[in-house]
Picture 1 (cartoon, rainbow, N blue to C red):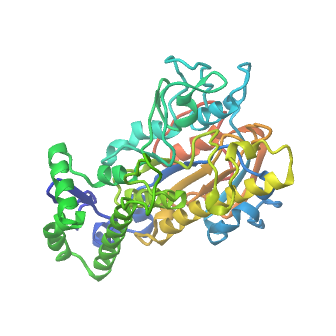
Picture 2 (cartoon, rainbow, N blue to C red):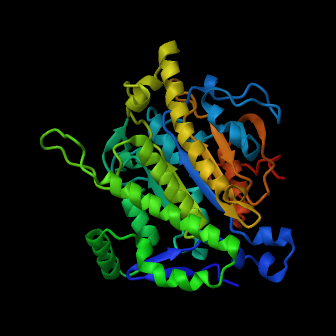
Picture 3 (cartoon, rainbow, N blue to C red):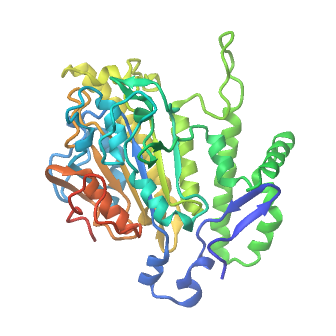
Length: 447
């Protein structure tokens, strides 16, 4: 039997392994399938998109199992049986509650914390510990990294970004404590090096220099360890190991390609290092890295921010040159609503790419998606109204086969989103009586 914590080591690098049959107690010891499934780790990730969505092109018209994924959600049709569309959930602490304007800052700060952020543009910021960090504190010691925070927009910890609210609120989703946001990493190369770099900075630096100088793969440094492991694996595990190493090499190739100079650039313009110029490529590369992190069990908890709250990014890749935030104040203008739906669809296509990678990655007698809980959503409902009730929320994955998926569920008015988080925490092995503004666990989710 191969230990679940086995890693391949070389000069300044350590490569964690995917789940192999040789690590499965059911395979090695003849354990019952149900017990083996319980032994597999569960993962939890939170994807955030800003400015709300076009709800007309989002919400299914029918409830229960007989629902249709239309409009923005159409690209998730292949995963319909693996997901829950959850309507009616609310983040009350993103509302003004006497604090006046600032809905974008509050939307992101309260989304995972369920706490009212203090209105300040100074250093005295305060929100609350986020659900991912609570889980990381309780169960994060089981993995190399308690949690992983990544995104496609850089963050700020100071300045006034929204009607007297610090930029820390609108650019940080994860909070280690009520006064300490957990900044996200936006450079795929830095994420890759963090996941697979050695523990000693000096060794990591030497390995990085050698890889660059001789155009080597990180896999070249663990060749000897890999050869030794292969001698202990069966045919299925050998195939799985080869697929895994191929995916690592493919990510390395894409990182190298992102370093190539652009054909032309304006005078004085700086060339990005490690971050693809294409937003779509950036999002997918981050998604691939997250799949690797889950596959190798270097972490079981992650947040991924597609864009900061209030983002006015344009989406020229799909023919939308207007700023996203500007469009979100649509005033029911048909053309603007159609463009918002285009942006929502683009985001969903990238999310579907990630979900597909999870489902295609085998683990035990199932796949990574079976053992994951992936929440996708925004702290704003309709960007024009700045409402924080009836939010666009998806939950994808079976949570270790504990979730009864394949349904659209509508909850009562003002049901706290934090009620859902209580159930996710419980499935991660974190049993707490309440979190944020929760009033109790959501009913009707269990398989």
